[in-house]
Image (cartoon, rainbow, N blue to C red; front, side):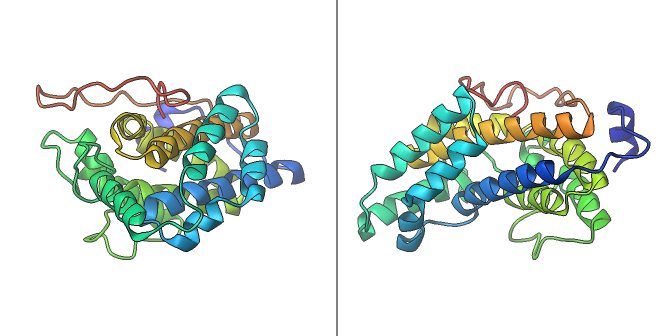
Length: 257
């Protein structure tokens, strides 16, 4: 944890260890993050589409996000999955793959999935936010497989790191999860998800972005309840005139997610 993070947040001297029920709840959040990670990590295939259609998955997600905004986000994602053929043909998979590429590979929707593009003056990848994320990972003994292919501050390794901390579920890990969400993801990821929810070509990725925003918001609230670490989002840097234009409000995504 950086000195800046310690100044921003009021941290407990000795983090409280979660009880059994809290650990179980956090494990559910980690499993729900796994759904987001599968959608964001790589293109969909037939097996994944079939897995997404399983009724047990939707009952589980509805149990994790059990407030009104959560139920709406789960319902929209389920509707998008239900609209897909049970066995999608190549044309359907190609359309999903093209949308995935526009979001995560080619910047086609002008919705960069990496912090550096949003937070650095030159709007390019692999800036200081990448190294900041790398320092967090190193503290917990992990690293990205190849930062040249996918930088440390890409949303996928960031969510993988949060999931790791939730699965570790020690008091220190949960405090770090709360601070990491605020300092490393809070200033930009809501803008990213909001833009995808507005601009993606397919209903599936629009709904997935909204679902991710609501899930992160609810997770952060749960971490605050357990750890006592209140949400503190750093102000994003002032941007030049080339700053990406504002996007529409996404439920669960404001002010930070």
